[in-house]
Image 1 (cartoon, rainbow, N blue to C red):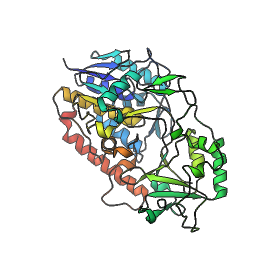
Image 2: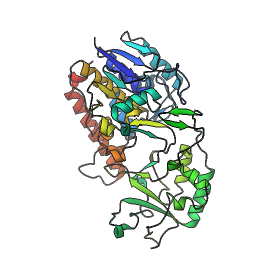
Image 3: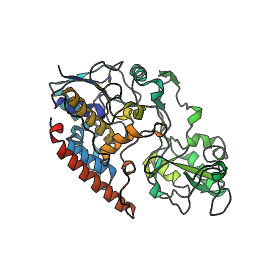
Image 4: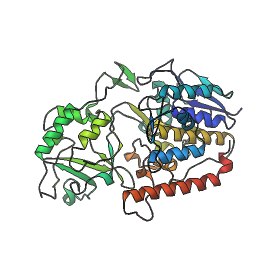
Length: 452
């Protein structure tokens, strides 16, 4: 019997189940809700959308627009449902979240070869399987994954700092340097945003008073050996606003310390400094060092743009504080989303290290097709890295492990252009053109492999 187990009824799991089912595979889709709920979910519906109801911009010159087009070319089930459940949202694809989940659940239930099982999967199955259990993977399954990958290869983060497009940083204010520079044999690897005493004082006032996201934790919950208390944070990764609330100078002795740096505009040490560290191989993305935060996204834009040099900052990813479980995919997965140590086991969705609804759908789609092809003894797919879907898969499987953090679709993860365009708009247009040509060629060459 050609059978596949899919663990998790979120976006990735539902897309994977559909893709495998239309290729003749008998799918067992495990979803523990509503029998066992998570702190974030509110219903037992499949593909429940927790955060924004927007899948991103549909504009062809946006990363999300490019990825949506690629997913449609692959025949994405969830993108079709999203379009059918869409609400007016300008140039974005946004949905009625209840209608979307209801439609996904109803259509998957109509498949005679998809069995939806409402119970927790406590361990990695010993049959062909896709693990798409998301960042809120249950404790027992988490332990099984840790045993499979090795404890050091299953990460638990409750702190993520914002990431910014380098092109949006004002380099007439910011400067490149490392602390103490050549005196300690360091190169100029950081971008530094200097603040005067007056600028810093105003920034701290706004930072402390800014609106925060209400964290939802389970009092006394034991998750993977760590006890979670309501409103508690690990001391080693405090939100930047919490550090600031401990005293006016606390940030200048912490993530904004100016020691070892000199502002070239005034040729002396600034009062405070925000450092930005390169976040991808193409050096197009930089993260705000030590700036994990629990501020609302709109407040992050408002407050962080007060920092000199970031007045026009474009955020690829906002900071977040929450329990976020994901495997160390570069050490665990192949580009096909198969595990290195077991060819019939795949990972997809947020647990694989992608962020955003589209990344979940894209990896679920690829894992579903590849798992079915593996069972059917057909070739497996690896989209070109010049496409957005291929670039996401390349990032989570090839990123240096020490720098690995979850990532969503953005132009910064695409390969560098052969001929550098003069402006950002020209670079984006070239990336889009390259991605479309590569995807069209790839789909044409792999038509038989893709065919259900």
